[in-house]
Image (tube, rainbow, N blue to C red; front, side):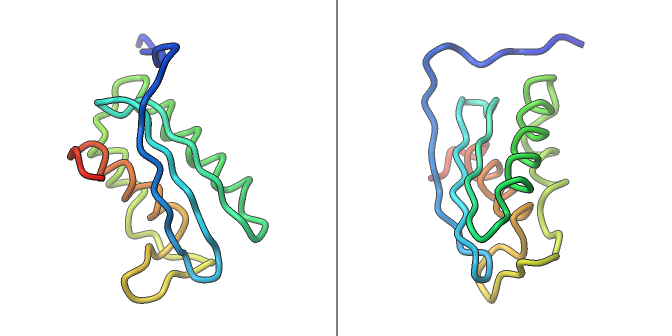
Length: 105
């Protein structure tokens, strides 16, 4: 498999999510999405980094954004989101990828 590296100059969308007590910012670059960054507070940054990096690699090696998003969505673990919020950091990242793939902001 060949990796598609993102261009030197990138454009993308950053979305703010509340996941329970935690604030998560997810940036998705490229169309189609090729790169994901996540920033989380309350001691969850390592988890956000790992999930975003794995999602980026999957996208760069040719996995369809819809498939990557589907594997991250609807996973419920602490911190839990309330009604209308993502149910986990994984879910927030999956939502952002899904919105970017569909051209939504």
